[in-house]
Figure 1 (cartoon, rainbow, N blue to C red):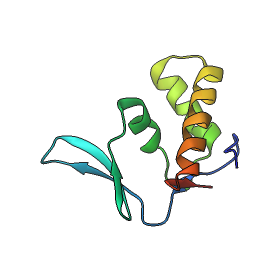
Figure 2: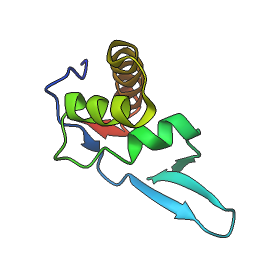
Figure 3: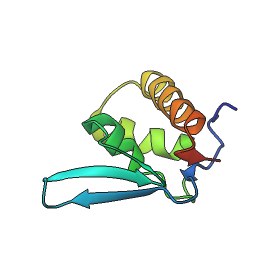
Figure 4: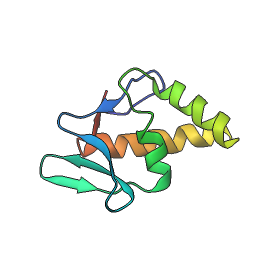
Length: 91
């Protein structure tokens, strides 16, 4: 499954994005797993709300970071596809 521009991703069942204040970092937690997203992944994961489409997320990121939309779209889709394969996000 590839998350295209009109897809509306959300965190998978049991997955949560949380700030670990003790360690001063954000983590993604799920059943029997946890990982620390890098800064770029964190910016994308903060936009995964189950209401915003991939296109809307990319538009937001392109405006905030003054980067070419096509490059951001390719990177966001690749990252979301990888996370979807691991069950972290679903559409």
